[in-house]
Structure formats: C-alpha cells, structure tokens
Image 1 (cartoon, rainbow, N blue to C red):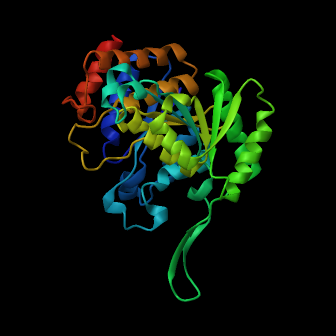
Image 2 (image 1 turned 60 degrees about the horizontal axis):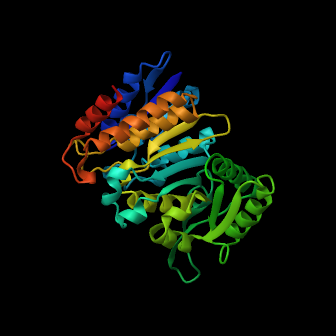
Image 3 (image 1 turned 90 degrees about the vertical axis):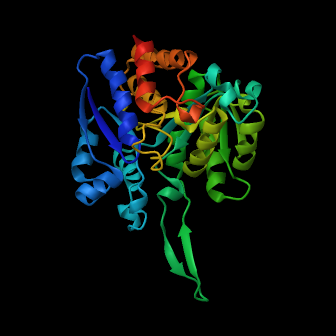
Length: 348
C-alpha cells in the first residue's frame, strides 16, 4: 500500500506530519510512503504547482494524503501557475469527482460552535460535493464589452453524465446512513441547476429506499444554521458544495476539525482537511492537526478497506478531546505537536 504524502504550503507540512505519526503508530503491515511537492512549494522548486513527477507519484499511489496549498507570494502569478492549480489538476487528472465532507459535532466541542449547543449537538451530516466540473473547470477569462469595459467570465456547466455519477454517490451514501438525501441547487434561476435537479430525480428511481428532497442553495445555507439536525446527506455541485461545507465547519466549532475524501470510480482517493494553508500561523505550531488526522482515518476506510484501524483513529481523537486536548482554534493553548501527542496517547 503506497501512500503519497503531499504536505504543500503553509501549515500543510506541520499537520501532515502529525497524521503520519498517528498512521505510523498503527504499524500497518505493507504501508509505505513517498512524498511529493505541490502548490507554492512545488512552483518555487520546480516551476509548476503540480510537477510531472508529483503527478506520476499520485497515479501510482493507492491513496493521497494532502495538506494544503496557498502562498500569498504566488498570488500575482498567472492563474495556471498558482498553488491552487495543484489540487484542481489532481482532481482532473485522477478523475476525482466525489468529495465527501462529513460534519459531526464532538459532544465536548458543542460549546465551541457559533450555534446554540443544543442546535450544534444535533449536527451529523455528510456533504457530497461534485469536484470535477462547474465554474472551477468551465471556460473562463477576461474580455472587453462592446463599450470597452473589462469583463471577467466563468462558465458554469454540467452534463447529465457528470450529474448522474455524483447523484449515485449521494444516494449510496444516504443508503449507508439514515436514508435521507437533500439535493441542493438553484433551479429557479440557473439552467445548469435545472438539469441537475432533473437528473437527480431520474436517478432516484434506482433508490426507492432513500427519501429525496430538494432545496435551493440560499435556503440550505439558512437551514444549516437554523436546523442543521434535519440533514443527513446533502449532494450538490462544486461551487455550492465548497461554500456549504465551509459553513458547516463553523457550525461544528472549527474548520480545523473537518476532514474530507475525494474519490474516483476505482477506489483511489485524495484525503485532506478542508481548511487552507493558513500562512498567518505557518511555522508557529498553532495549527490544529485533527482534521488531517481524521482525513487519514477516512483514507484507511475508503481507499484501503481498513475499517477497524479507521475506527481506532476516530475513537482516539474523541478520547483526546474528552480529555481536554484543545488547540487555539478550539479555545486552548496546545501546540500542533501536543495535539498529535494527545491523539497518540489516546490511541495507545
């Protein structure tokens, strides 16, 4: 089992290091690692955010554990050379289209949520986000209008095959949970969303055991803070999923707690925390590594079939939090390494 480690920029190396410590403590037979450069670090070393050797490693690996990309010193580069193109390039080249972002409140952290504890405590949902289409991959650019004004454009589009495959991912996830799927779109104003809704309804015929509902994205954003406990699985497009999953992170207390998996059709996946590179705290030992540790647990479960080992990591995180482990984003003072130590102690 080959794991590609792509720490990336900012706090990426710090948090990936702690996740690797936890994986090493499990002593999983046959697991090996190779590290590659991505993002701003890759651009500075090799002139591109996703060098050929990194992409080749990604294609060989059974799974990818990813840190974060983003470097303010690269913001003035041409778009295709900016750090964020690394993650977009990996999604495209590996066909990683189904992004799973669970959001569940650890009881000990209910008080850290921006919501009332009794509201936050009910959160146990999964956002299934399509990650290979939408405005992120559509035609984009700058042009001049007829009267000479500068205009930027990004085309949002999905074809029915793209919608159908992510709809199946959503229904299958709901079937494995509580049997409720909410499809989020903006079908009242967007033709892309109308196609989305039509295809999701067509796919629902294959899943009579799953209750399907539809919600406009603006209402979904409101409902996530009014009554998040109503949601089981949410399936939505790339742009809406990006925004809603970040919102969900604050509902559960901190963006430093949310893991994610992005899968293709062959079981290979890229696993990463949903937060960014946080350059303002990079190198200071303040980053919360738990989202990355939990991403490693998802990697064991979804790509490697090691459910018992994944359960051990998740239980260790819960035990560490119950024991008072808190990084600054959770209202505490523990360093990145100390948070890793707490998980390792709980794991032992």
